[in-house]
Length: 415
Image (cartoon, one colour):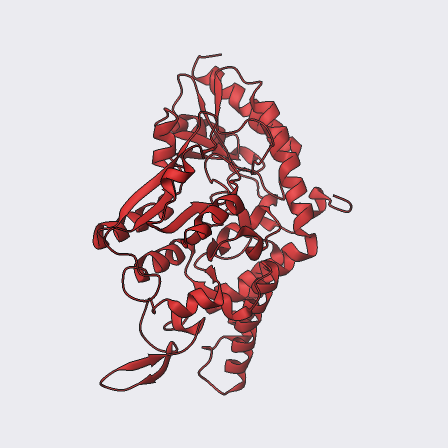
């Protein structure tokens, strides 16, 4: 972590200087939900709307050319950031939810990867709902079967029956790289090798992995990977679907409209190659440009440094949280194949009550099921409180959260 100064990093995030009710400093521990934005991203969005606003790939005037250059420049930055072999493998979406729905929908329609009756789709019990519901819809519509990996008691994937789950009938294996609830980092390359051996497509949800890890899409073994901008220091309303060139070429379009066509006649249309085949209509222009600025910021910090800080601060938080009486961590309690989200329960206390009392001290965490109801159900919890530090989190903030948890216990009389 040579040269990584978290206090210096914090100065780049104006919201972290906020004072909340009763003049309490903001302690933001909800970055798995959405990350805060550095000033450079905020300035990029303001500058675009102030000086360069125009639609892309249509106008030949100067503003149009500037907007298009910045938009396509963001595609280049993202391709380099995730080590994609080609910029044309980067498809802009409105978020990872749309990216996953894009894949699940078009696989029901046509092409060499089409899913039909008798085929099987494999997911896991720790998925975000965005990587469960689209596959449920796909299998219900096509007559395919949905299967899933279970979770062990310590919050890791149970791979003991991998040969029963991934078979010659498997057409798709879709799983999360880093769990948004449990923090587990899954052995995606190992699972991908098994899936490729039977000719299945491999889809990854990298919404949490992208912000936390140096990312190399080819090293994962996946065919399609989605992530989202707002967890990556970027704006909301922008996501990315990366896909191998040959896979994108074999998928039909998702939306029809302007810019995704090669030619339109009244009888039929032909389509542009990827990525434009999947980007009908006016895209999220400013959001993509803002995401490009976020990528610049992360690249300047160095994702190796970001990952090292995330490991260090999460390990510190785990150690401190295990000191709190009655607190149960859902998921791995050691920093082995583990990311930054820490979900927990406290005996006799509801997560919403915990979150509200912490908020009264200026500490922002999340209470609920985190769009991961099956994982909660498997571990015997209806819901949980989640703490998720990031590249701007300090040990002092973790200490403030721990003191807040003691105050929660005292407030509700369980101390």
